[in-house]
Image 1 (cartoon, rainbow, N blue to C red):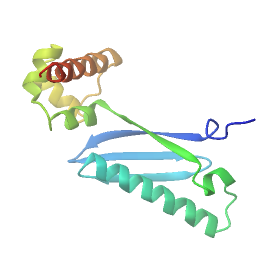
Image 2: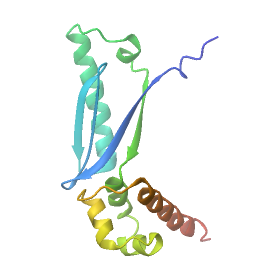
Image 3: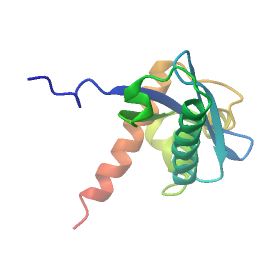
Length: 143
């Protein structure tokens, strides 16, 4: 017996922080193009999912050749945060001074990453993620 849930299509969507907004977009041959912005991360995800549903509904109404699984909403959306969005979200819980101390990356460089002035190499991203995990583990250890 085939487990159809395993076969669901997953749309991978990267979220960035640009010009005082969280931003994301998706483009492919089956779905077309969808782009959204919002002041909050949760708001952006909600807007993107609603835009996707409306876009698919419009494709069906226009008579486009839409795969049944897409028309039926049998898909998942997997979000990932670019370093700019990751650091912006982290500002809600800690300061960049703390992130700088933990990661060894100076605050000016972190600021460049948040504002998308510079894009970090993968090794820098890993240092930032590890540093944020370390900060989180510290608070989880408090009883």
